[in-house]
Each structure stands twice: as C-alpha cells, then as structure tokens.
Amino acid sequence: MIASLLALNPYPAPNIPSAAYNPVTPDDFAAFDTGCPTGNNLSTSTRFRNRVDSLIAKIDHNFNTSNMLTVEDFLPNQAQPQDSTNPAGDRADSSFDIRRRFTWNFTYSFPKWSGSMAKLRNGWGLDGTLNLQDGQPWQLNYEFEGDYSGAAEGFDRPDVIGPLHYSPGNPAEYLDLTSFAAPCTWGNSFNDGDADESSCIPGTRHFGTEGRNSLMGPSFKEFNFSVFKNTALSERVTLNLRAEFFNLFNHPNFSNPSMPNYIADIGTPDLATGRHSGFYAITATGDVGIGNPFLGSGGPRGVQFAAKISF
Image (cartoon, rainbow, N blue to C red; front, side, top):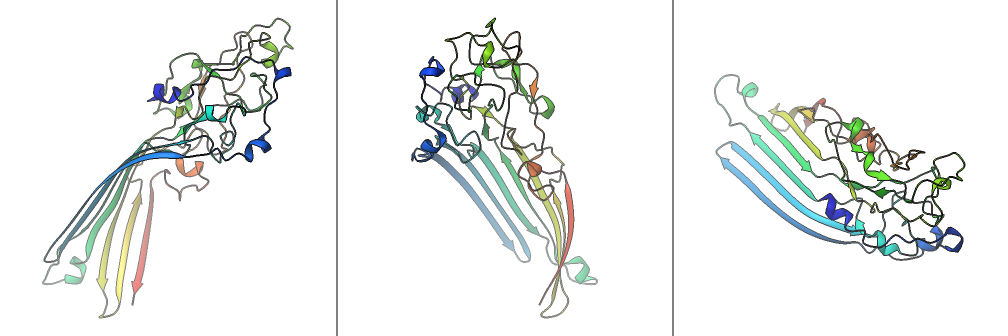
C-alpha cells in the first residue's frame, strides 16, 4: 500500500537555483480552484431483525472501501503544494481518506418472563457497536529547519531514501526516520555550521521525493457495549437504566501523527550526513488528537451510568 501511495507523486524534482525561481505565492494559489476531489466507494450492508414472541434481535453491519484523492486539503502544510508551479504534482490521497471501514451494531432484548418478581426479571437488554477502520494519510514536512529545496515556498518535504518501517504497537517509535534525508546533496564545506540549506552543495537542491500524504497513520479499533433495563412504573411512566462501556476492551487507539497540532515536523537532519535518525513519535490518543479528551472516540475505557424516566 505504501509503495502505491509513493507512486502518486510522479513529477520530477526540479533542480533550479533559488535565484531563478519565482514561485506562486500562497495567496495566489488560494485563488486557484484546484482541489478537484475525486473518489471511489463500495459499500455493503446486512440487516437482520428477528422477533419471536417477546424476543427482539437486531444486527446491522456495514463494510465500506473507498479512496478519496485531492490536490489540497484544508489542513496546515496540506493546503499548499511544496511546488506551487505544479500543484497537480501533489495530487494524492486526501487527509480524510479512510480506505476500509467496518461497523457492526446490534441490539438484543431478553424474552419476557411471567410469575413472581416480573418487574425485576423483565426489560433487560444488550446493545453495542464495533468499529474497525484503516488509518488516515499524513506527511512529514520541514517547518523551521531550512529552505532545502531553494524554492522559498516553506512547505518542503524530505527525500525518501529507503523502505518505510512502522511500529504500530509502539507510539514512541511509530515511524523510523532513517528512511529520510534532506532533499539535496549534502556536504558543502562552506556551510554556516548548522544543518540547514547552507550544507547543501550548490545546484543540487530540489523538492523532496516524499509524496504528499504518502504515509499512513495507525488503524482504529473500538468496541462499545451497554446493558439496559426498561421498567414500567405505571401505565404511562417508564424507567430506563443503562450502564455504558466505551472502548470496552481498553484497546489503545492513537491519533494521526500530525495531530493534535496539525504539524508533522521531521526535525533537523544530521549535520555530518544530511540524513535523519531516530523515530517519529505519536503523542496523543484519538480523543486528545481531535481536541475532545475522554469524550471523543479513541480514548481509554470509559464507563457511565444513566437513568431516564419517560412519561
């Protein structure tokens, strides 16, 4: 999948001295109607409902596979191309693209019982939701390290120099950064002592080969479950009690690596080699990443109790 995503960046990296380069400004690009999203979608669903006497069972499942392509997204560092003279070169998976998603919903009401203690024994039920989905695309950018492409655009990305290695179960080492390097030939002896563009050999600076949104974020898995009881207090008054368990199995769900700041800064390359080292870490769970701690999807197990009287 990653190889196919990288192939979506087919344009050659230009080798143009910055003095001769006159890019379109971000304000100019904002006037272009070049988002042009396209997508493909396939959905299947199954619904089962059975009622025998007082037994009610309802099961819904939905599987969705889709692909959304865009030139730009309304997110920092993805709303502008790294080469504003060739915005089509940044056409790739949308930041909101979720390739596969499976949902399963069920409700089950237990049969009614007669005899003693009927109000205590009757009205019980279970329901739940299972959600499984692929991760969303993202990318690495240079934020404040240097103008490595020489284009003065401010949206540079690194070169990909090796296979990509992910560690989905280890957010502190999610992506191995040794597969990336500054987009130029490194080793200018007349540098200023910093690992910025002054270390690039003149004439070798170019746009990075890492494609827009060519990286993949972690998947999402969550099962929510509840137990409920409906009790008729009178002909017109009903008491509903619920115990709800969000992320019942406490499965760790991590946010897209660019969240919560909408920035995935790769950092400074090694001064001696121009290559990157270490790992890119995910710093937030899904609920924190979207700015809704605990209450949003992707947080740790949560339990809540509710009571409702209907009349």
